[in-house]
Image 1 (cartoon, protein in one colour):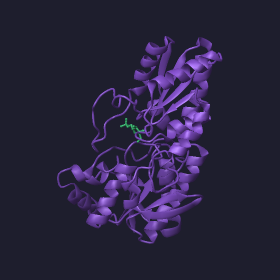
Image 2: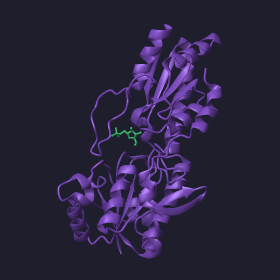
Image 3: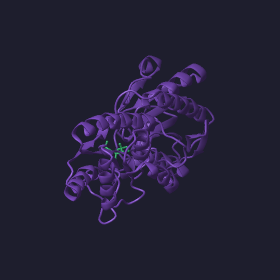
Image 4: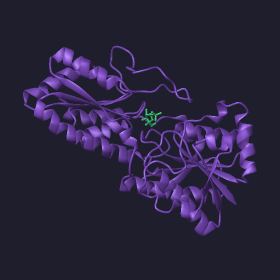
Length: 342
Ligand code: F6P
């Protein structure tokens, strides 16, 4: 048995831990061989491969990024994409494919598996934590820790200058990173895509914070939207899955706060720092377990499945269920955090 492995979409800490676990268990316990496909779906589409064996995965557990590279290539949109993928799998004698990715990468795995008979197993990853079928995705915990540390640091500088600091965090259309890091970092306002925000209300929270001689920290998710108006974007460019690139709301909000309150306001956009560097212990643990269970799914020939975390168990769910619904923040969780606003 030869198993192909690819990592697609935005990279996130823990990808290498999954790859290592898949290869270690696959070689040691099942005698499988592996082919790494480079840069997500670009690899099978173009026949671009990397050797993948035990020496190749040695020492990669704590390393961020992915030794296989990643991209947002969509083979379903490429000319004869499915045929080319199938031909390359045959050329490299790959019997099964493990796709490690988010909504888009796993959406392709779902179509290949359900509609075109390609034996695929999926592993969920994204710092956004927005995949419905799993309690958590690896990468999220690391991103939250990085954002929390940034908020801690911003508190001290904000207080030295008595100014507002707006922190824009990633998460696409889900507010998980904002909510978790905002709570952990003691933010005075947390704005998430699931609940449109009122700029006057944010200004009132800011003013009340200054009254007690503290400088406010406002955490805003890149996908958060004001009550009146549209999503604030730096530019309108789309990625190859048709998603608009988010970011810009933090800058816009700081200007609005300054204009309406007369208080100095600055913005920090955390951006890709949230995706880089070594994974947290939790993400290493989760990624490793996902890898071990993904190779078991291959052994069982349980195609069209994704491994998922339910409580502390790793279960298998249909890939289709994992990619059809976005997991967004429950309004009750957001209301709970409201006691700290202002
Ligand atoms: O999905 C992960 C993510 O980091 C989002 O939070 C963010 O909107 C997007 O990817 C950024 O994408 P890119 O790496 O293409 O800039």
